[in-house]
Length: 310
Length: 291
Image (cartoon, rainbow over all chains, first blue to last red; front, top):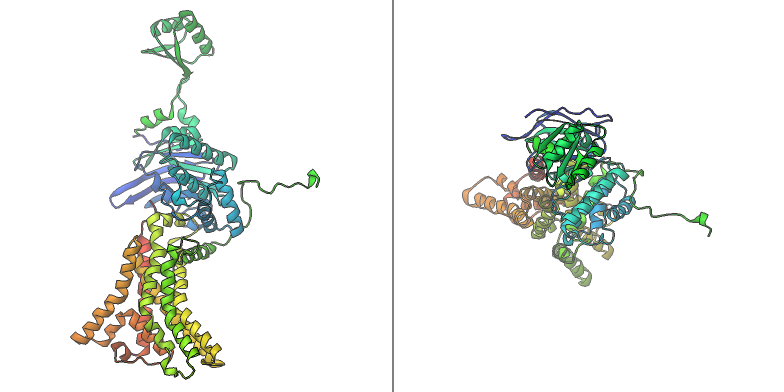
């Protein structure tokens, strides 16, 4: 597997890892991981066991690495753990929270644990719970809440102390499609409206594609792709056309107009040209064929991921 | 009021640029939170029952003693429970309380994953343990100092107690005994609780660790002729003996621990405290907190 080029960020890195190695006995969890995570919302993508959670635990300074360099918010989390963690918000993957605590008490407690004075902690716990849509439910015991509500409580507790960096480990785990959409919108809003840098660990491609500015794809303890979504999606220019029938005839018409066309079943790939859209429209209209899809040629995150061996 | 006077007070969630406390504040917050939970404060009634019963058991001898002395005018001082023997008398309540407090303070955090959340904030493992230790110790003080202090205040007010410098001296003795006893039970119970995530198992373990060595050691000394120094492994008996000596009293009977020097007895208690703290710290140093 080819080692990916780690993109040099245009702005200071939020997390910078160089050759990070972490072993558990004989198992290698991270095998020389290189990644630079810049500002904004970054997806940490990878299958289960890829090393995402291990990477998060190293970023929090909760585990020590066996080799390599790691910098979070400009400091080594292993040596400056407490100072770094005070500036980070974290929502774990698991949903086991103290059952009998009211949501507001739980979030307030974690706000105080992150060094907010009591009065501010109370105020911000309420504000954070309102923000995540649990304002009316904030006095309910966490144990009586649904999985979706608990995910929101975890998100509220991760942002209540206004961290610079928020680490979310599988924040949509256990949510139905509607809840997932709402949660993703919420994360996007927190990242854009309040200017927090967010790292979302997930194994759902489509989630990362929907809300993230950049992606780090981890497999087998290594980064196999990293970059902004725009960079990763970059592919050859041109158009992809999908028609109901008579793809060959359409290809002949377009070739006659001087376009470079490749046919694959009902799918045509058109080389880059200034007037390609107009030419396709006219050709399809003249032939009277049904146009299913017309989109710029490029790569989806799925293409990138599958190409990476995921 | 004009529109110019109007102010918007609730702006919803926003960035925070207010003051932040010193990182040590996290220890105080966690200690207070833990102590409240252990005592069932802010929780349902069922969480308050056991701490209340145990506290009542511990205070009962003191209350009885004070009531008798107040209600019975011709009572002899020797008929009252002495300060020295109090730690021995409430030994079972101390063990029960320790078995209740430390498991509640430590086990749920590991079981629920809260430990990982705490350690993802401005706490490290040592500070976390300090916070938990302060909480358990503080709650244990209720039972190790509380009844003795209650007796002192009640006797002084009723005219049976010491006066002047003697009161201050007795107060210091009470604090010395209470703090030492609380430290011992805190260290032992936290050490045991660090081995399991289940509160019930930890509670049983605490009771066993407190009482079983004492029975084995006593049998070994009395039946097999083992040296008296072996009695130092009987933590509850040793700390009770230390309490007698701090108050300048002598325990009735001829227990092996009574034959040992005060330095050895104090050393035995100190060693048990250090051993418990060390075991707990080593356990947490290696513990997998992140999942």
